[in-house]
Length: 84
Image 1 (spheres, one colour):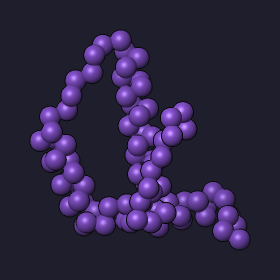
Image 2 (cartoon, rainbow, N blue to C red; image 1 turned 90 degrees about the horizontal axis):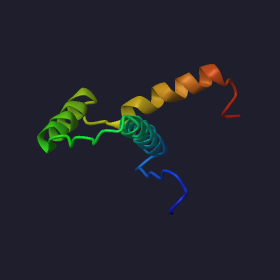
Image 3 (tube, one colour; image 1 turned 120 degrees about the vertical axis):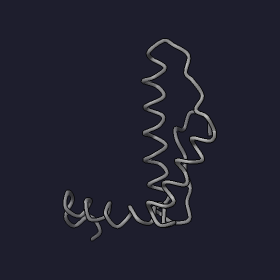
Image 4 (cartoon, rainbow, N blue to C red; image 1 turned 30 degrees about the vertical axis):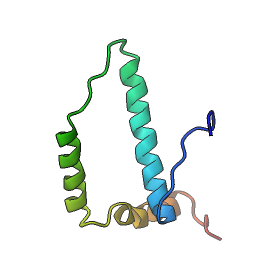
């Protein structure tokens, strides 16, 4: 899938969407950081593991499923009738 952009999958549409949102966001951050012209530093794997556990705790293990209903409400406000 070279040159086709980002691709994500999930156990549900909501999970795949949230994964795509996060993936695109971190890609944008990386591109902006690289534009600074300096080498990037690797993040300590223990920090990544800690962040993962914090997200799991904050979402009560629901992950993306917690965000999906709110995203649908936002869509309904900004585009009434999107699902008709």
